[in-house]
Structure formats: structure tokens, C-alpha cells
Image 1 (cartoon, rainbow, N blue to C red):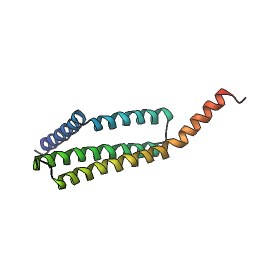
Image 2 (image 1 turned 90 degrees about the horizontal axis):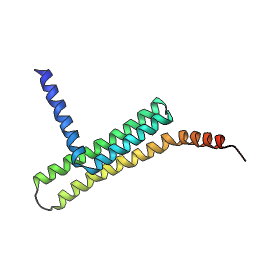
Image 3 (image 1 turned 120 degrees about the vertical axis):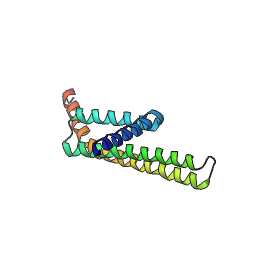
Image 4 (image 1 turned 45 degrees about the horizontal axis):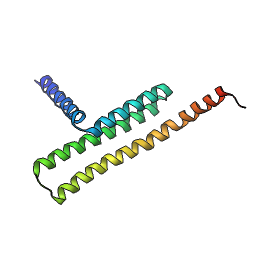
Length: 130
């Protein structure tokens, strides 16, 4: 009985993820950005801990986007017209996504900067010093 319940819960979670990707342009943007960052991380061979920080930042942004989507849908369900409190709820949720995105940018810069410096120096050495 528990096994079937777990499968159903997992299915609902996947349906929520699919809904967010299908209906939210920002979620698709975050996914594309995440794929680019993961490919860059693998190409630059960043260390395990750094890779984990990048994955955590990516996950945080995508979770924030999904919570934002869920909150927007609940607010829309509760009120079919403009209400200042509904606007505040939506704005605050969007602000949370912005904070998560800024956090991921800072993490990305902190993680990738040393690797990019090494890569640039390598390219300079290959070009030779005149």
C-alpha cells in the first residue's frame, strides 16, 4: 500500500515539474542556463565540492521558480480580480526568485572565476609571448 502511494506522490511531483517547464518561460530559461552551466563545469573539470555548490544554486533557483508558480496559481484561484494583497504575494514570490538567481550568479562567479583564469592563462601560453 505504501509503495503505490509513493509512486503516486512521485508521479504528482513529476507532473508539477512538467507543468512548470511547459507553462513557465522563466523555468525553461533557468533549465537552459543550468544545462549550459553544467556543461561548462564538466568541460572545465571543476572539483566535486565546487560542482556541488553549482548544483545547489541551480536547484535553489528552480525550486524558487516553482514555488512562485504555485503561489501565483493559488492567488489566481482565490481572487479573480486585482487585489493589493494578491499583488504583494506575487511580488514577494517573484522577489524570492530574484534573490535565488542573484545567489546563483554569485556562486557561479566564485566557483568559475579561478577555473576561467587558468583557462585564459593556458590560452595565452599557447599563443606565445611576443
